[in-house]
Length: 297
Image (cartoon, rainbow, N blue to C red; front, side, top):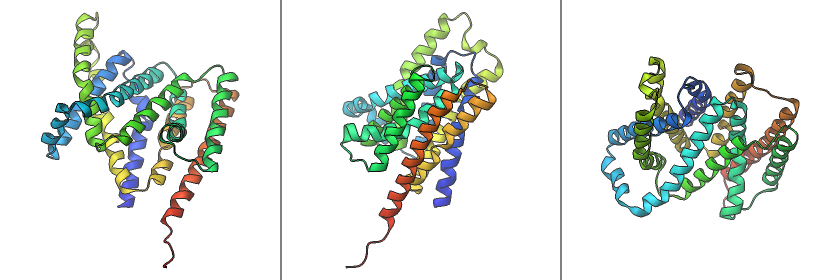
């Protein structure tokens, strides 16, 4: 079971890692249109999964519960902002910076836990947050400006994860409801923007149309794999696997897309990587200490 969970997690993060390749193939489509196609396609795909699992009746009851709809409206908006920022960043030549956002995200989660959930940090966690903060400050003042794309991605995903964590729904129902809340606005937006456009989306090349049609499946598949992995393997293992995606994205940005990466950038990234090593080592050690059997009394 554990090996299967690790495999699911690795495949999910590899797919996420190669997202820049997919979205760069859609560069001729405006980012907001890509996001709208992604949301609507993901909702339809997730709806099929829900009906296959014979949970359709229960799922649609959520749309008649104002409290549930209100509770998941903010995560839905955060998800849309995150996806829009990511796609704009990738297609504007900032793949390296988008990868930075997902390197920073685990440390943002720790920070939000302290500030909003009053969680107590162990000393290594404080050190990792401090070193990462120095790394971001270094990138801001010496590497040419505030990495706002990275921070936007890290904080929107951090707040999204926090709200989903405290919500009552399971991962599949949560994501399906969030995309469902955005489904009608996305369709309305796509209708009007293409109706008024000089070059509507259906006049794109065939390969672009095919990729747009697959956007929902490509979006939902790694999320489903990730949800399955979380149920099978320890969170400490997930914590280590999560660096696969930004590492692939970073390598794509530097070596495939030839984005600028100065010495100052390298130093800033190294500080953040050091922070992540400290954080990951402490998380694994703490998780193992909890699994040690207590002596018989």
